[in-house]
Length: 75
Image 1 (cartoon, rainbow, N blue to C red):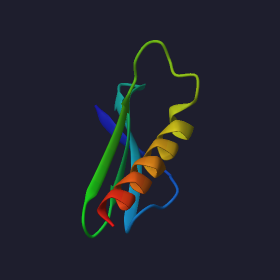
Image 2 (cartoon, rainbow, N blue to C red):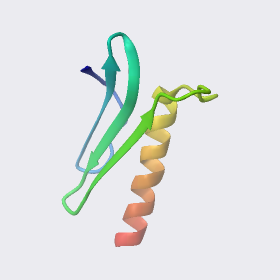
Image 3 (cartoon, one colour):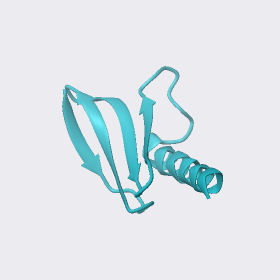
């Protein structure tokens, strides 16, 4: 297994995303959002059937929604 980073829009204090690869196949898509009060980690595993939306597009949308909900709940 290996990890390959990819760019995502900035959320919180710091955020980053990466692919977990098994050989040349994507095993999971993951994004981490760090704030002074909490850390969010969102993962999309490679499953069948494939999602209609590319996980590289879908993951930042899910992370942004999770961040917004966490901020609303904790403020």
